[in-house]
Image (cartoon, rainbow, N blue to C red):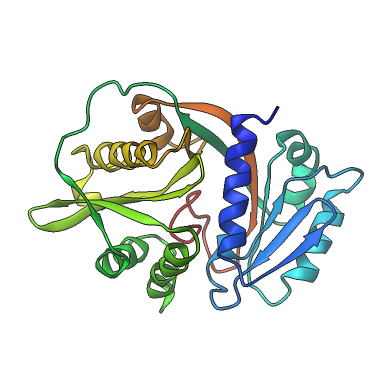
Length: 269
């Protein structure tokens, strides 16, 4: 029987496939590429969703170097914690940073209701400047052109997986948002963001709650999101009725001039 975690991870892989320009199979998974967006890490990464078998960290790194030789980063996500942990030390020795991800599914009523009537659904064109602004505020977001490039990738998500955007304004200004992808009876909430000056005002609660409501209305029996297992937003999602259903491991080798990013930040999707 397929677990909800397996359904969620398979859905993420489907999103990757729908928004890639090419794919290559490897013994332990699939490598995805979008050649028009080489700076978007999560559009150019490998998904390890099959057993490593006897493969070592050296083997995985060699495959990634062969496939992504023209890219300045390397990234691979493991569905199996056991496989990832078995090579973690070797990956770190090769210069990879490890992020522990938790997959959370909407299973319960929230601790309190979201503010009604404040969230609106917007199109890509209206969202694009806000998404670029969010990226510029990241430590790595000041590189020329990167904010515009990563914001523009949302068009691929709209066309490939029907991405929808839910946002809240404060005093007429876009203050926070999230994305929703629905396919069949599974839905993913992604890229939850609030401008720093508007944090602490319930905006993330409002947009995520609206997205979950819309997902249910679209027929999704599983509504999930990925969160950094060691960062504070996972506690907010817990208060909103999301429970952990599984974990994955993300290994990233950063360019030498970049600091570690937050998991699933705009550069990651």
